[in-house]
Length: 143
Image (tube, rainbow, N blue to C red):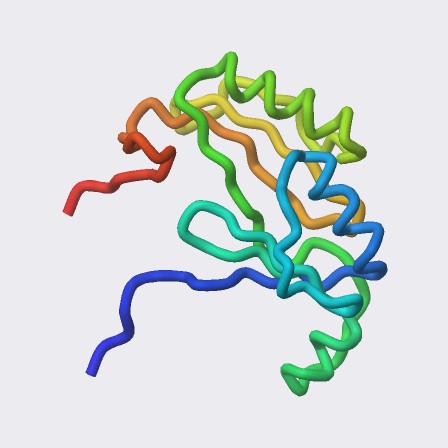
């Protein structure tokens, strides 16, 4: 047996589902009709984003809701150009994101920056000249 190489749903634990939902809606993302007061689902290209109470998510997973801080996880939004990175980064800030690291040339040869959503989840906005992107904006890695 093997596990299919895909991610179906990414759920972010948030302090206030309504506040988090409003932020992502300001980005232009649309809340699905299957959402409820306690959970928001947003259809993205190839994956669903969930927004759920951080405390409830920890309880559901059977783990302790530890103090906030860097979780060791970032989400990434790749673009086909540096100008695209700058535009999306500025747009995210205008929607209520907090700057973590403005876009800049980076050691690996690309261009990226980081912003945090209202709950501190880090998003990298990046242009990687070494990765191909398909017509849907998904990264395509060589075999």
